[in-house]
Length: 382
Image 1 (cartoon, rainbow, N blue to C red):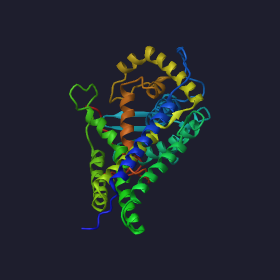
Image 2 (image 1 turned 90 degrees about the vertical axis):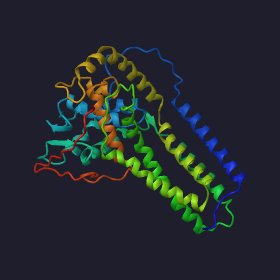
Image 3 (image 1 turned 45 degrees about the horizontal axis):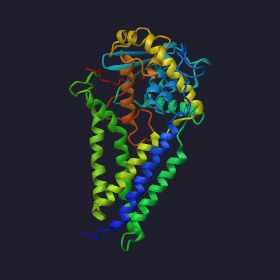
Image 4 (image 1 turned 180 degrees about the vertical axis):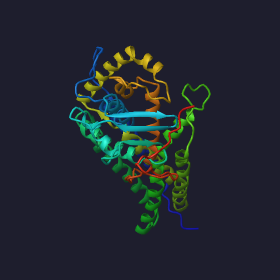
């Protein structure tokens, strides 16, 4: 049994006061960033704001998240005749129809090059087993749309978040320096277990939402179609192992009180990293215009689109504003299912946010065919 390293009770009391203060500051700052001082009378718009593509609209409407925006960008490419999207039972097929031209918005123009990397490749199929190209296209899209929106329309307020990280480190340092006769080597050793458990915890926090969303479809009274589980859903469960191992060793050398403090600080900073993303003054103006346009889509097209676009079957015709209907969460049939499939796939791919290989992660062995078509299956809702 090693000599347990732990701080006196007053050190933890001060540390938790610091955690509460940090959380309160985060909340107040996030509210201030998201609060719009402008009060406009909504005027219905019959067209989207000038210069705002469906992808950018989705990015702004989702407060800086890219999954729905990426789905909208793909649908925009399809509705304008650059690609064709087909859902054939339990997999999606993307087919290149023509090369992007100068009329294609910048955020959409980077997608076909990743999906169809060479001259002879015109078809791409994907599901949750091997999906390197769709994830590469998503990464390129995110970098591009963030470059367009940040910091003019939306800001991550990274400076505030890094200040929160600094405060968190100071809180942990205050506790660890209260350990009796602690050596530098011991602190470094403890840091290894903090990093091991913390990185796994962050990874789990990234992917649990997708699995929880599937679980909710099985709850009594749920109106959503049931989404079958697959191999990707084992990732959150598998991550429990390294989380438990890392924090168990940390508790073995210190105490459960120190582990609770560490977990609280990691979770708070993870949650507020996204909550601090907020529109700028110009961004709030654009979002208000998008909401006014959404009002028009909701009244004019929502019922018809949801009635005509059956989940599990790609519409024969993607209309002019189909992409905006998906970006602004108006269409809740085929487009919503397509968005949900992409969201789950992309969330699971970014467990540790590692660079993608050409073929992507391989949960099971699936290989391409001779004409470089990669078949990947996304189960339909049941």
